[in-house]
Image (cartoon, rainbow, N blue to C red; front, side, top):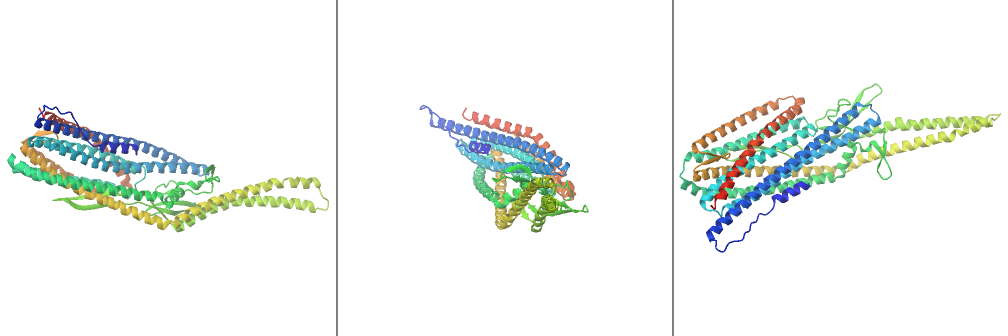
Length: 604
């Protein structure tokens, strides 16, 4: 998390300015100069914050790329191990590859969590920096405030659009990696696609509301002085909404921290560690007295398989993910038994009115934390199957060794009972007894060692059963915290939409005061702005219609096609979104240049 700390420290820096004031400088000139310095300092901090966030996103993308390579490499090794003969070496190799796959999956999920944390921290810092810029702007005269306020709003909108696009791309890449790494099942793949379309609808609804608000002001054709008077009231309302948004964001950040604490409690549970052990193949190797692997495989061990890992045959059917094992009877019949269920926290979807006339469906996903739940009968069958292997292998080996020793002992006894003793034959027969006894001792040690490993496995499951109540309570606490975070996110979303709608009114009134409109860095007449607004509204309506149709198509898609379909669409959307980034960057550059030029000219 080093880069995150660096990012937060860069964003959280307090802006100050100082200068040596010339005694001969008039008070009015000093005020203008200081106002200009404060604005320039605030703009520089905003620009630095944007750059820091972009670098952090790039770092996350690089780390994600490495995690995906690690997962694909481990997956290939796992599939190769399964293709080999079903001997202990192949099973051990499969277990190691499984653990490496799990590690890569955990890294992908960690990056997903970090991306969410990065986004919310950046929003908090940007709100603070924007507040500081607006405070600096208030030191300018009325005309400068109207000019710079409009230019700043255009720059802020462009910069926000760019960062949102970049963060959306990063999130899409995380979703894609999770799909490709098997962290998402078919139902979740379906939900991911529907969630994306719902977000498009919510965004388009907000776009319509904001452009309608601008259109209303443009069409009213108020006089500049009248607009200036109204602007005072609307700006005050915008300032209050900015405070509401900041409070909602802080509450969401607090809820996120509480959710993270609840997740840490999960990882601290004995049950969690043992679940990772029994599903990760820890008991597939013998250990020394200090608990370290000796490098010798426990050949009787049965490796548990994940629900979708069906290379060994069809797993047990279940409505949740399962860890299962296969047994084959003497007639070649296969039995698949579920030992543990792996349950996943689902998404939270809410529909509320976020602004007048805007009903948005916002979907938030609680972080997927695996919830391992024991299948008591499956555990019994699993341990019994391993015990049966021990009996079949080490048990029979000991039985054979004992039989060989007993047979040789009988030979010796018979020779000694003979009327005519053959001392040479007796000594020769006796000489074989130590070696046969060693074989018995070795076989007994092997059986004891195997039984000890079985006992360790049984103890692990017994401990899990004893810890089940604590585990369930911890999971329930996490679920409550994650849903509280989702609720807090939604409250922030409502506050952000309300702020955006009010900001649209202020933007339009400032345009009336200035006498021109700035759209994507381009100056327009009011007639042109009205035409642009009508086009934007029409485009948003089309987006909503297309998204609703897409949801209908997803709903009827075949279950076995959903993951492939989700991957295909994400890859296509990422390519389209990345192609649009240069245009967004140009708009940011143009609006920033216009704002910089106006700020520099303020004192001239």
